[in-house]
Amino acid sequence: MNSDTPFLAARQTPAHPAAVRLAHHEVNGTRIFYRSAGDPAQPAIVLLHGFPASSHMFRDLIPHLAGHFHVIAPDYPGFGHSDAPAPGRFPYSFDALAGVVDGLLAHLGVDRYHLYMQDYGGPVGLRLATAHPERVLGLVIQNANAYLEGISPMVRDVFMPLWEQGDEGPARALLDAATTRFQYLTGAGDPLAVSPDAWVFDQALLDRPGNAEIQLALFRDYRHNVDLYPVWHAYFRQRQPKTLIAWGRGDPLFLVEGAEAFRGDLPAAAVHYLDGGHFVLEEHAARVAELILRHFTPERAAG
Image (cartoon, rainbow, N blue to C red; front, side, top):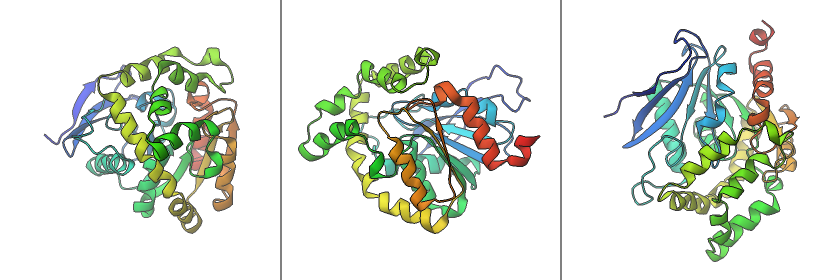
């Protein structure tokens, strides 16, 4: 049935703008979990998570934004609380992930939005932006790569053997608990401030039977994101979307050089470096929210 299903009641008073509604909606036969908050009459901001995370990564950011935006944070198929059909039953590609998010937004009647993109959120969100440039109110880019300069040797060492020789070994190592913990803690300003709940939650979902094949399918497809870099650069140059870059400078996966590269195509972008790693919201959710409000709603932020 193509309808919303409440998942869990929020603890906050429902009338409060920061109260988070958790629901499922079916898109083309796949149940998609999403978090929403704020007044639907406000401008929308769509929070697009990375690997190996889910909308859970935005748990601290959402309450800061909900008084100013209609916040929507979906889990992709195979992630978080969304369905995880086997690769034979769902085409795990970034085109397909973007299509699911597009379908969810259509169901919610959201046809103008800001896009917050982290890691995988970049290729998902930039597919939406290039398909529907008239819908984009602005971009928030947080450790989401769109330039070769930002790809670290560590990332190359994972993907190139898979793409060129079909060697799955390094890619499967990316699914290990030690690697998930590494992604959260390496480059963190204060590793003791990063809650272990984050990587334990992610790892529990990665360890589900069959999930490794889902992730490997997306790893294989990631090469098509690199192929699209010139298309995304042309979009930046031609459309000049209002852009905020909030980047964890200690990220060992997506380098600061990748953040700097955006300036070539988006000279008006506001670029801020934070003392954190790949998952900078674990330490700096309030600061990132402050930057978003200052950049996109200066009159409301001042109030």
